Length: 345
Image (cartoon, rainbow, N blue to C red):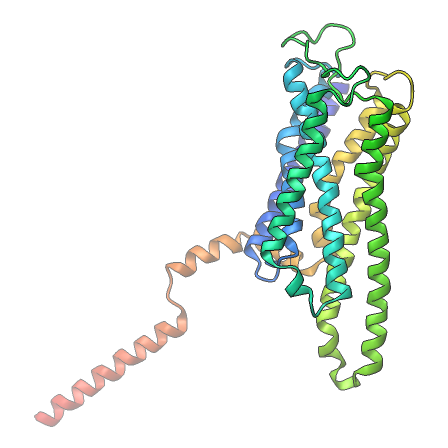
């Protein structure tokens, strides 16, 4: 009964994660209002969550359903753990890049387009993924994270999951877990919170400045662009808040268990905090339409299949005005021909 209940929870969980993040990518691609340089980072975050749903969550669910036993050998276990760490790191660094982008958009809106160009955004995304790949795969495959500095699980054979103590998880020594947790989570988190605090202060100052310097009849046009940037900032701040709520318990648990002398096998608490962190990948596609009207419209078009279907029908269909103009042209031409013939007669 317990296994069946886990199936009922985990399968829809993974399906929602994959489907929701596919919708985010399609929404940005189809909606003209969402095709902005800033949303490149939103798409990168969605791709991170999508890869988590496709590559990591099915294996994590299989391990959960098999009682934490890993049947695929040590090499694949290390690849699975490294991929999980890479996608988590990519999410954190992408959120940091989003915070920096919002800070530039709010604090210096006139020079934002000159500073944040598509080429620079693409270079930032390449740097984010390269950094995430390096800090996740290199330490594990060189043995920097274990107590004796040997590569973890390297002696495991495929199908030997019945042996005692063979749990596929991220091993660590005391120094490494502190560097990993503070360098890749707590420090970026402090930077992001500081930037968003500064963003909201600057935004409040901008609103007061515009109200004081702009006449009432022209105030609406002056504040529309600022209001749009503020709404985008609120949306992304909500995404940051959800990330903190979901992943803070995991990294706190990781730090607490890492400073202990012995590493305990996975238990219920470790599974709960891990899947709470995974839940963030399911929550992000829900937050975008909840706080952003442009995403709501794009989602509505996707759910009605209008985004793709209308494009196909418009390619093979002449607009009504062109049809009427063409018909009127044909009618007038035929009338002129008849009048000419009548004159000849």
